[in-house]
Amino acid sequence: MQVNGRAIALDKEGFLQSLDDWSEAVAAELARREGIELTPAHMEVIHLLRSFYQTYQLSPAMRPLVKYVGQQLGKDKGTSMYLLGLFPGSPAKLGSKLAGLPKPDNCL
Image (tube, rainbow, N blue to C red; front, side, top):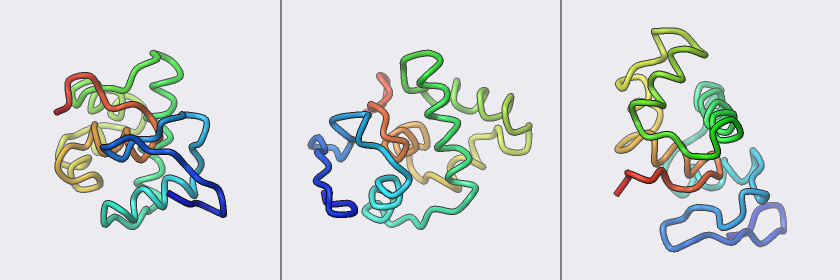
């Protein structure tokens, strides 16, 4: 994948091979490939995912993600439905992908 003239290596599922390659421009391109236009609400959760990863050295599964978002952003955003609205299908997996993180362990 090319972003701003830089080659970004992805694995076969479209996750970054190097966490250091992440930027908001990379997130936007990954989202575009998934048919998503990033909004400030997306970026708020993406930055939270990156913070979670820095703290725990792992990408959260769905339950820890919902709990963490609720703790950080409030109960109205800390719900599965809110996250599904932003990241359809599997919010933990898709959110982690857009945040430049490894795929969560228990995601298919």
